[in-house]
Structures are given as C-alpha cells and as structure tokens.
Image (cartoon, rainbow, N blue to C red; front, side, top):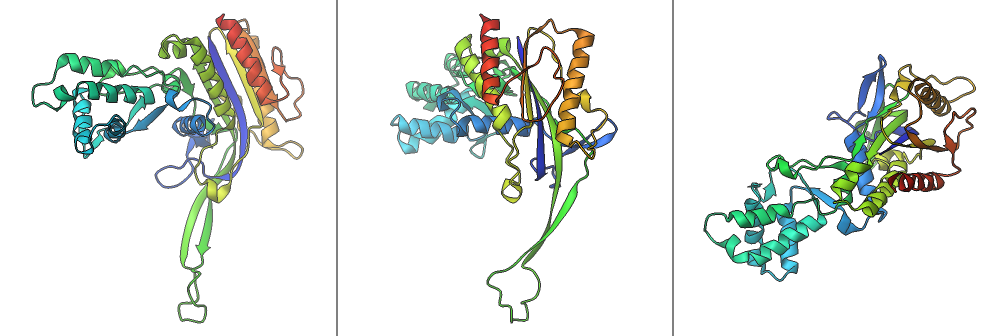
Length: 370
C-alpha cells in the first residue's frame, strides 16, 4: 500500500535552495527553465521538523553525522568511563565495526538511530577489556557490534533510508520517494544588489562616503509542485514489523510535508508561505506523479493567478489519468485548499483543513492495513 502527497505551494521572493554559485537551483522541464528545490533539501526540512515540533520522540530519531566518535564518547562518559579512556574505547569500537576514522571523524556521513548509538556504547563498556587490548580483532565481538546497527527503530532512518558504503548489508531501503520540487511555470533568476553601512564610520571623515560592504543576492519567486510517496509495507519492514510506529511515522511525515519549509536565506526573505493545495491519495498499487500537468508552463491571466491555475491543471491531469488508467487501486483521495476550485473530479473528497485531511488519510490507511 502506498500513500502519495501532492502539494501546490507558491513562494514569494526567496532563495530556499542554492547551488555552488549561490543561485537558486533550477532545471529544464517542458523546454523551459524552472525553479527547483532538491529532494535532499526537502527531506532535510522534514527531518528537522520532526525534531523541532516533537512529532517523534527523540529516541526514535536518527542523526546524520561524521562525529560518531564524539557521540560515543558522550555516551561512554555517561556510563562512568573515565575521560582519558573514553576516546580510545570509542575509536576501538568504531574500528571493530570496520569503519575508519580520519582526524577523529568517520570518512563519510553515517545516518544512525539514537538507540543504535546507545547500544554501541553499552557494548563498548561490556567488552571494554577486549576492545582496548592489542590483540587481533575478535570476530564474535565485531558481529555483536554490527548487530547493533539494525536501524534502532529510528523513524526517520526507516522513512528515508541510509547507505553505509563499507557495510552494504547495513543499508536500509527508503520507504519514501521524494521528488525535486519544480515550478509550474517558467522562471528567471533575478539579482538583488545591496549595500551595507558601517555604523561607526564618521560621516565627516574622508572615508565617510560610500558603503561598508557591497554584494549581490540571487533569488526568484515560484509556484512549486511537490510530490512524495510512502511505501507502507517497506516502512513497516524497516521498523521491524511495528505497525503502530509505522502509522505514527506516516502521520509525522504528512505533517512535515505540509508544514516544513527549507531554511535557505530565510532571515533575508521570510519566505514563510504555506501550501495553497494539499492532495493525498491512498492506493493499493501504482504511483502517479502529476508533474506532467505542468509540461506546458502555466501563465497567469488578468483574472487568475499562478496558484489557482496550477491547482486547476493538477486536478485536470489527475482526472485524465483516472480516465485512462482507472481509479480502482485508489482507496482514498482527499484534498484541502483555500482556492476557489470548481468541478473537483471524483473520487476526490474535499476536506476543510489539512488537519482533517491527515485524519481522513490515517483512517483510510488503518482500514487498508487491517
């Protein structure tokens, strides 16, 4: 069973996700240049939202870090391991995992659950003597340490998956597919030339004229289509068969998809613009991204704006796919919007608020999983 989320979201002047030159990311689609927000950026915003809003208990979340040694040292100190020994013990545990340290950091980012790191620290204390000895690595001990890397019941790790290059057997297949957000219309990057005044520079001095700093910020303004789906079977598998935790993880993900906003240049732009439309489908099989609703770029008219026209195009395309492929696999389709939409196609149910939409989705998921 799959849960799909479709979002129309119009951002004012912003630079939410920039490339190596500082420009807002873009892509070519339908023969024209579009604004883009990478899926990595969107997933990061959702993961951060989980923690900020306490949607998931902290012990059921993960950390993406190269500072595994530092994290283990902190846990070892809490377990009364002496300061002078904790660093050596943490390094030995990491090496027994088959991972290498480079200047106190792992060679690449590891996405580990809080409980996985707790278990590693506990095992390190239990096998302190063996880890700190100069003897050859104990294969039985290594197996115990590796067994601790089971995802730790971390909801975000289960949703978004992970890759550990040196230990591919510890990879976790993501339950979520997240598309790059693209603008429904053609876009051009613009430039904001700015100057900053030196507050302590005397106006009457020879250096009084001119700015203390000059610079340029690149930005755009775009109405985005965002899409993601969750494979509930994969999510349950990733969480060790815990159906209740999978459902609570789905709820947190839905809330994050609606409310989480990337942090790029927010202090300079305050691009806090909530979605205009959120549509959710629950289906037994098959997946429909509705990005092709915007192959022909949307253009505003004298009477209708980009947001409304984008929402209308989305629903029209959804109805076309339903006519062509059928809607038998759909068990629930609902949307919430403040836009004055007409002729909402069957079987779409309109909910008054995103809260009611999420509740209706969770009810449909519970029924489908029963």
